[in-house]
Amino acid sequence: MAELIEIGEQQERVILFAASTNDSDDTEESVEELKELVKTAGAETVGTVIQNRENIHPGTYLGKGKIQELKEMVWESGATGVVCDDELSPAQLKNLEDALDTKVMDRTMVILDIFAGRARTSEGKIQVELAQLQYNLSRLSGQGLTLSRLGGGIGTRGPGETKLEVDRRRVRGRISDIKQEIENIKKYVPQALSEVPHLLVLNHENQGPIGFMGIAEQHLEMLFVADEERGKGAGKALLQYGIEQYSVHDLAVNEQNPLAKGFYEHMGFTVYKRTERDEQGNPYPLLYMKRGVERRNFP
Image 1 (cartoon, rainbow, N blue to C red):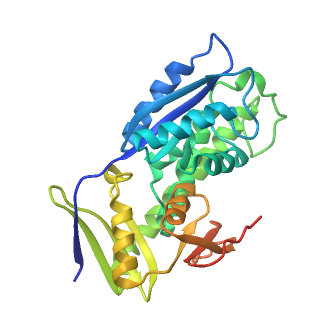
Image 2 (image 1 turned 90 degrees about the vertical axis):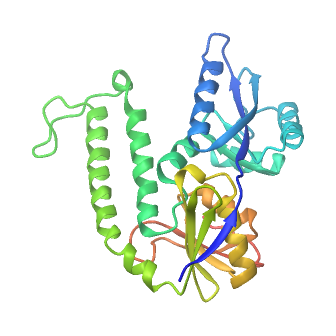
């Protein structure tokens, strides 16, 4: 029988930041749009920071002084993280996290979070890739004028098809394949739930069940939170209960899900091993994490 855990209402609070490199750009309008995306993802915007710059800083996106201002705003507002209106490079993301000592996200992460959530099972991992492909497909629009035409190919594409059209067709084909994979995996979910030794359900005092996790021999097998409850402390409440009551100390997370990895790191878990494929043999790299081990870096 599943165990129920009761919690109250919590919500993630974030500060939005952006850089404006042109007096005539639409940075303010874009930040307002990001605010709506953040709201859709279940978080509350508690402040915004926009810096006027000639160029984006290649290492930290913002300048040193603005980063300090942003850090002070995080402390004063009690924000749980910050969100950049642009797509950050891996180096910028890491440097900002080190400087701000808080969770750092960008627009792409918010969009993927809305569509895919924190993937932990094979179905979730595939849905992350699906969301990535859908996002990339939308970014292909409007680029036709800059993409050169390719020569015709028998059985590959129609005459005069542009590279844009080829990219769209390939992405749509992969989306179709992934949707089929998701349907196949769904057939095994009931069996997986019935076989997990400890199934714990998170029950909200007003809304009923909003999440659950599965534990087997101190290993976190799965952790799910309802989309509308993400960023409100539900995942933290579940995992903390698992750590305290069931001595959970290891888990595996999809490498393509930086939000989930960041969440587990915040909860004291460290990456100690990486594999190129998931446990079903699919091409989704996994990061294995434990509590109380030394961090390792992987290429």
